[in-house]
Amino acid sequence: MQLHTQEVPRLELRHASKSFGRVRALSDGELVLWPGEVHALLGENGAGKSTLVKILAGVHQPDTGELRIDGIERRFATPAEARDAGLAVIYQEPTLFFDLSIAENIFMGRQPVDRFGRIQHDAMRREVDSLLASLGVDLRADRLVRGLSIADQQVIEIAKALSLNANVLIMDEPTAALSLPEVERLFAIVRKLRERDVAILFITHRLDEVFALTQHVTIMRDGAKVFDAPTSEMTTESVVAKMVGRDLETFYPKADVKPGDVRLSVRNLTRIGVFKDVSFDVRAGEIVALAGLVGAGRSEVARAIFGIDPIDSGDVHIAGKRLKTGNPAAAVRAGLALVPEDRRQQGLALELSIARNASMTVLGRLVRHGLITTRSETQLATRWGTRLRLKASDPSAPVGTLSGGNQQKVVLGKWLATGPKVLIIDEPTRGIDVGAKAEVYGALSELVQEGMAVLMISSELPEVLGMADRVLVMHEGRISAEIARADASEERIMSAALGQSAAILGRAA
Image 1 (tube, rainbow, N blue to C red):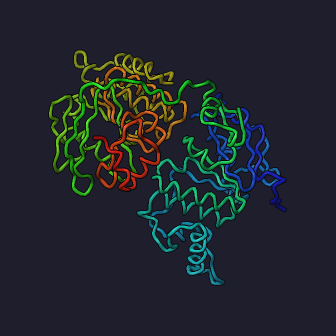
Image 2: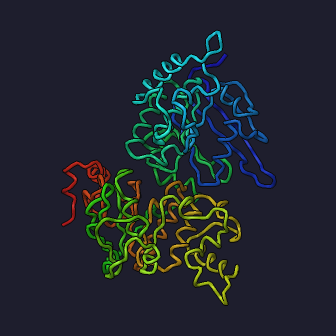
Image 3: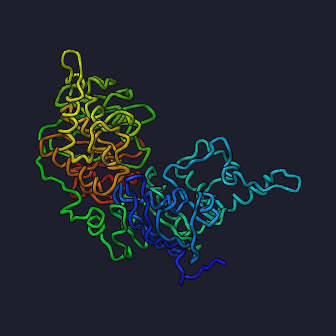
């Protein structure tokens, strides 16, 4: 019989270890989850979080350790056994059948049938509609999954877990691809789950989410638990120090640089139906942040400036010279670089080596007698890897084997190798751990001290406030406010992002 009192942890993992050949992925994994608690699991990439979660989910079996669910010792040989014991995992990218309805996805493989073996579609829809209503979301059971947002797909996964009577819910980077309103809706659902005594393990790289949602924090480093405490006893600084194993003098090392000449000038840039009359300048030695909700047109503006997407009207100037629009090669020659939002799909060739990826933008410069040598590629990759503190022992290894933070450094190094005057960087720290974030911020600070102009697109408001000299806020394809660093606040930026007229008062003269 399961116990459901506060006297017994919902889940307890002690001294778990796991090795893959000679690689020890987990040396001392420990975790205690209580009913009605949201528990943050934090750590840099490679800290052992994923291995621990896969042990809980039945994907991996531990070499040593003890797992208890509601006080009863368990060992899962398969994910199905973990699911039957009440554990469910919600991944960053849900895996659903797009051409089936929400109800069919939730009851896949266990549809209710009558005595003749016929699926009871009405009963299935009624139960799913009741589940969705209990979560406070406006979705219908008979709606096809195709076309639903990532946020709605995650809600379906949560509803599926509840239909299986899950009392431990593991959420792995659930907000990475969500807009702020979608994050707020997810948080509201998580709080409803707390009221049902569900224990929730919440894995995130966004520290503001930790303090907004969780009650307890466990921090891992090098395959072991190194710290845990109530969230109320922690600060951002103490969390960062525990995660990286050292004190960081400042998480946002913003350099105080006097802006120089205008390096990037955008005037009346318009793409009908996407953005309209976008105008701004970025000066040498300056970081300008382009903020706003997902869908406001920020990435589309960046792609148009670089020449990937067409425009209907407007001009772009680099260092005073008009840029030929719709031509990325001309943009690179003019001194413009773009680090894209999706590094894996748009920034890297994952199967190629680190060295080849790092040199891809400047291969023409490496040609000697019609050939490109491995040595020249390796030397270039090593030079930028050293500057950006790339953690990789073998430049010939596939770049896909690196952590997210180190992949981002390769993309950044690839574009810095072109010697740009202007760097556009879209979501510079999405999906990377806190230590890598601090290193990326340090690199950006060094670049502006050297006179580079940086246009930074970011959905993380602490990042915007910590690194930007000015903030341009977009709303429905237009710049709704321009806010100086001294006047910027989360409230002011969000007001402008939501189109509230009061935010226009923040516009610079």
